[in-house]
Amino acid sequence: MTAAERVIVIGGGIGGLTAAAALRLRGARVTVLERAPSLEPVGAAISLSPNALRALDVIGLGDDIRALSAWQGDGGLRTPSGRWLARADAAAAAERFGGPLVLLHRATLVDRLAGLLPSGAVRTGAPARLTDPGVPGDPGRPARVETPDGELEGDLVVAADGIHSAVRGALFPGHPGAVYSGFTTWRVLVPLPGVAFPSHETWGRGAIWGTHPLKDGRVYAYAAAVAPSGERAPDDERAELLRRYGDWHSPVPEVLAAVRPEDVLRHDVHHIAEPLPAFHLGRVALVGDAAHAMPPTLGQGGNQAVEDAITLAFPRPDMPSCADAPVADGLSGYTAVRLPRTTAVARRAVRTARLNLMTGRVGTVVRDAGLAALSKAAPSLFLRGFDGVADWRPPGGPSGAAGDGSGAPRMLAADHGRRGPEENTP
Image (cartoon, rainbow, N blue to C red; front, side, top):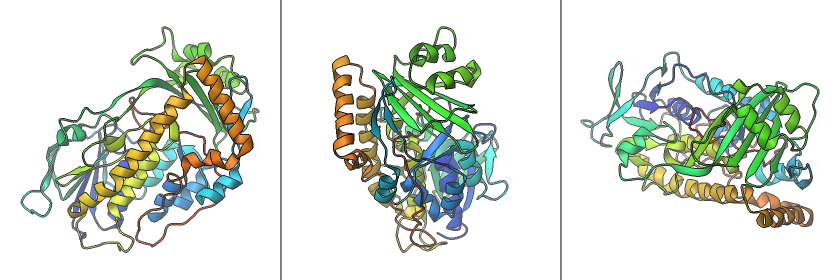
């Protein structure tokens, strides 16, 4: 890449901002187009596992995020009555995956990523439409993007425009796009002084609940339940949560008592069931949900977006900053690396959703008994579900190998907190 390479990023969420920061570090002139009036995110949290934290190390942000995050210590998996099915061994997980899983408010991460960009690089209230994907290597065919302020030309376009990506639809019009995953989600973020509890996720019949403390004293809670697409409460969503979860173990009732109806966010979950043929076309690369939207049941949606962004910008271990090769010339390599990995992670997330949202009574009893027995007999087997996911390391970066971080992870929290009303966040 030369310092003059022009990059247009469509979407100012976590994937788009990470890509913008990484590509700027390579010397690009980056413009981020965000259709929302501000970068202020929906009030929710996000969990970052060791793979994403190591990716953030490449752009110098990993330790900053670790220091700002609520460290996820010992926790586990429970039944609605409060019985522990499995306990997470923080020390074993930290050793296995080389670092922590941390939880923080999504706004914190967005602010830190945006802070790596120069003033004016992010344009909010700027919807964008891809009009020409361009042709790599042909200076007469840059990519073209239409905005309210006129047309922009770019040597590279990074499409990070979410689950129902318009850019994806333009590149691959024959692809079916995202489909309903079969369940809906709720999120709340509230202060809960005087109530102490370990982070946990609770599995019932066709429903789950998770409660996690944040470093600022607030509590982040999420719920998910099998439901028809588009269904909404006849009164309000707080009342719906009370009906579904009001008799579950503490601190669920305490959280619901602290929640106002306007605090509750409800969104249906969608995922890309049929993988795309590629994550690029012409001079355009897809990242995050635009490329591989997945259920949040592994907590990897945002984490995989961060991986995408870093791999796109620094695809080789020997890649220096301000490299000569244009990124658009290597997009086939980006697809070759990222499509198989994200497809495998997404399929694992779908399988996990089938397990933790099981609706049959007998199946649920067998599931719970199996989890309890597995946790007692071989606790390390419980962590194997994250092998090949949380232990990922970036291919390279401007400062060489990424740092390991430290601390105690909890490998149960899901990825909760991406932007927008249609996002996969319980």
